[in-house]
Image 1 (tube, rainbow, N blue to C red):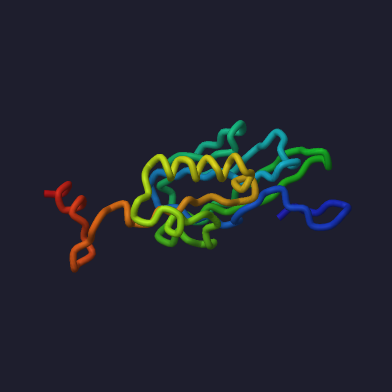
Image 2: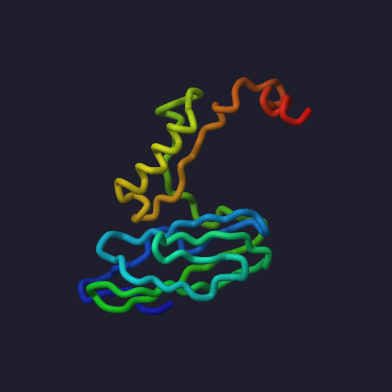
Length: 162
């Protein structure tokens, strides 16, 4: 991996995981954490076929069917000069290669969580700058599905599949 240090010491330009797991051919959305002060023109090279990068939003999206580990280079320029860092996309059956960093709704909304609540929390991750520091998840507790039967199924699931 290229040198990610500055004269003052360790200075990573990307926040968040350096290994990212994704399932083959499943929809994938990943917003790279770019801390304030580190923004600039971003370039991403080495993405596996099926994934694309939007430099304006810092988001990688798509579907990739090519199993295996894919080395990706992210480069930019900021006040300290040019920089480059490596991340790895691993396409396969193991997706939680790095513990997710995010926010969990359970202690706030419980079983009363709504779509509007989730959207407000996702927006808050961006508006507060937490997404720039690598926060990528808003975890929705399964209470939104309603009551469960003895086997763990919900009334909504049964009625939508019958």
